[in-house]
Length: 336
Ligand SMILES: NC(=O)c1ccc[n+]([C@@H]2O[C@H](COP(=O)([O-])OP(=O)(O)OC[C@H]3O[C@@H](n4cnc5c(N)ncnc54)[C@H](OP(=O)(O)O)[C@@H]3O)[C@@H](O)[C@H]2O)c1
Image (cartoon, rainbow, N blue to C red):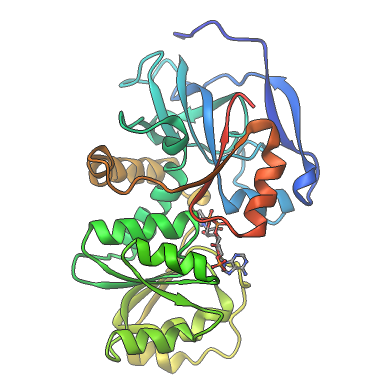
């Protein structure tokens, strides 16, 4: 196996028990070995995502065999190559979607989930792309079939996912409306070219009706879940698509009137990235490479970075995410 000289141990951030940010503790561990189809990456930056917080609390259904160490997206230097890996070389800077384990100095990365780091991005920005942009592309564009000329509603418009979705909507000619819970987030949403809706002040479905002349939106990317289901269907145009990617408001939708679904010919679906098969993740990586890499290379749709924490301060990064004041992405910088 081609490899650089590697240390015998590394720093990683463990979830020592389900709980608050304080259960995230640095510890020494063995450097992982890449399987034949994996890269070993010296991590230089790792994105923090809401699913990491849900995992830390003990509520994430972990795929079998996944690393228990949090961290779903990284950027760094390739320091070892599995024997079947083609198309990457030692010393190359890559970013990619992990199967866990990103909060560490070294992480194995399936080669088909890795992409070359865009030359115009530093590693912090590159690490903020994979989980976020893969999720938006897979849900809003592949499953949701959003196309130029359509209108989208993005819930959580100030989030890492939301800001990426809004930039991609603008890039691909999709008119966007987006919800957020504060004026500062609404201002950021307006700055990304979308119509901002402060959900604490206005009913989003009423604003959608007003802004679309009663027609509704073609597609909704939702991370709130149960409490929004009825109003999401009300906000859809005929043949509209609702894609649920998060359940921040709760899993259960009570008193949902199915007649509204029929009258709209609405489609409801949802997905979670971690549960996808390696082939599905590879297809999404290839699609993102084809559709989004040229855009990023041209300097557009660059991830918005809210704040950067050292790896050893992962607990502080999680506290910041749970305060919920951030706009865009929180990233860990390694070494930490
Ligand atoms: N399905 C998938 O494959 C997948 C992959 C990645 C992420 N996700 C999901 O996508 C969502 C966003 O992830 P992210 O990493 O971008 O997170 P994030 O930056 O922390 O954003 C979460 C956003 O949700 C909004 N929100 C609305 N209701 C909330 C509530 N009850 N509690 C907390 N926040 C609430 C917050 O904005 P306001 O202040 O405006 O309320 C915040 O901007 C999460 O639900 C995550 O689980 C899904």
